[in-house]
Image 1 (tube, one colour):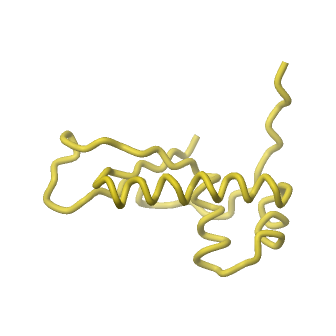
Image 2 (cartoon, rainbow, N blue to C red):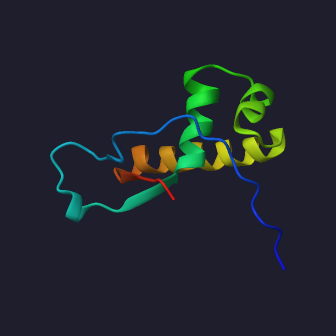
Length: 92
């Protein structure tokens, strides 16, 4: 039996949930799913320049959990940018 997920604190609600390359119809693109947790981790650590420890405190998770979420988010964003894929933000 897996351990239940600890509730994570998300302080940001994005208005835009899709990003895609210009001049390519969405129907022709592959998508990369970015969770709201991953978006929040990117926002805190990359946009607001918080240390991972501070970001983890704001999200009410451990620093190692934040580090794993952040690594996953960065990989997905890089995959979308390099591969010309759309990014879809999942709000759960």
